[in-house]
Length: 322
Image (cartoon, rainbow, N blue to C red; front, side):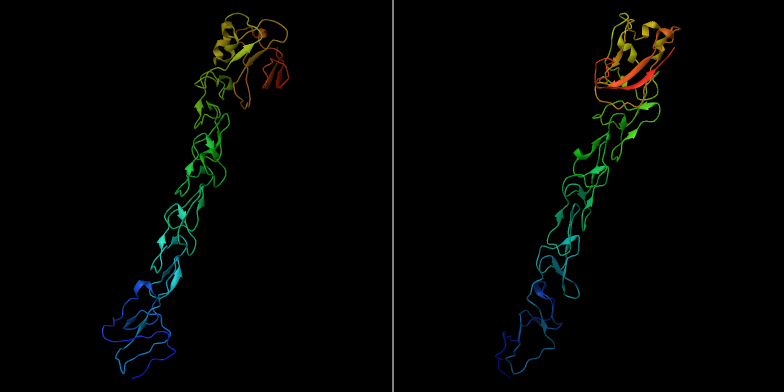
């Protein structure tokens, strides 16, 4: 028997039809374990009957568990989602795992995409940079892409295949390389830069056992490059004989590149594109008339086609023979 307390902010009547204890609806947190469910926000509880018969009362908070958080099982506590997970809903009882290619920090309401140059597995707290030799595979990537053969990359977090650098002449690489390689003895790289060379080729028969740049022209990159000389001794001993690749011809006068006798005779080969020259070898005639062959000669290298003139060229070698 009693009257309503005037200080009460909410009044509640307990009587027939009151539901028995169970989980709080809507994920609301349980304040006290009991046998009767009441789902009001309460300051004061006033009973209007002379008597009532209940064993306990369960009170549930009307406060919501915000997005980015979830209601922890067993404790009813609202806690933040861990890294690599997210929750976009109110009053959730679990968080969702971020898919591969995305990531999240603590208390996330959504996952963020990895930018180009990075990748992630499912449930990642952050993205991983693509390592050297690889580049990004767009945004939200789950893996990186290897640089193609004939190229290389040394940096981290490179975004596109355009960041892979071409191997220079006489060098090659396999896919996913961090550096370009040189060919071992007896082999050479048949192409030029821009050719994406992935391996070495055996030098042709009768060659010097190193990449012969004088025979790196043509569609097959294995033909003699353009040549010229100050004059032709005859119609057979023309300048192209010097890059035909056959030393055996040197025993016959018809297989030689030969000029007329004169002041400052010269012979030249045009490598077509800029090449890196490491060494060179010249072969004299071998028909018993070697004295009529190369004598007191010089080798000039450069970008000028003005015969032996030093303008734009560099003197690499001077030889005196008898």
